[in-house]
Image (cartoon, rainbow, N blue to C red; front, side):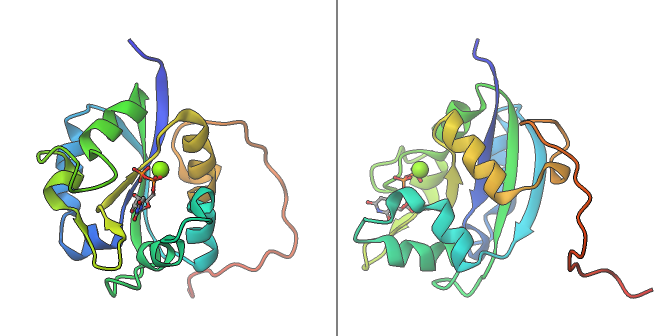
Length: 170
Ligand code: UDP
Ligand code: MG
């Protein structure tokens, strides 16, 4: 039995465009993990670059950033979630399947729905953290502590002065 872990899952823009959200959530529910944070997020170039910073020297990096930003699918958003529970990282990675959709198990999410574009980027519909260190870095990149319903990592309260924020007109 593994320890309880958190992992970041993104339904990438191709997953949204192909209307796979419900299907992917159903597949992930097989894990019996808990969703402890979820949102639809616009992906800025900075966020996409930070998310894939470890791949910045790869020849496909620019295309990958465009892909995550939604520029290849006219869907400028992703669905971001944190799944939590025992052995969460490996459970979600196993359901996601291999990075290359052509090599992924055909019944995995990527094997079933991913494709390789002629430009060489793997459009593999889902992101899943691959280890605990990566999960922490990614979760802290995509979510603030108040957006997650459990205390995953140390946080602190600050009184922010002169923070510009948008509020509803009442
Ligand atoms: N990727 C790609 N070509 C490659 C390797 C990766 O297009 O040869 C893309 C693919 O979308 C992948 C993402 O870059 O999901 C991140 O790569 P990583 O090696 O971290 O794979 P993952 O952790 O997503 O399986
Ligand atoms: Mg990875």
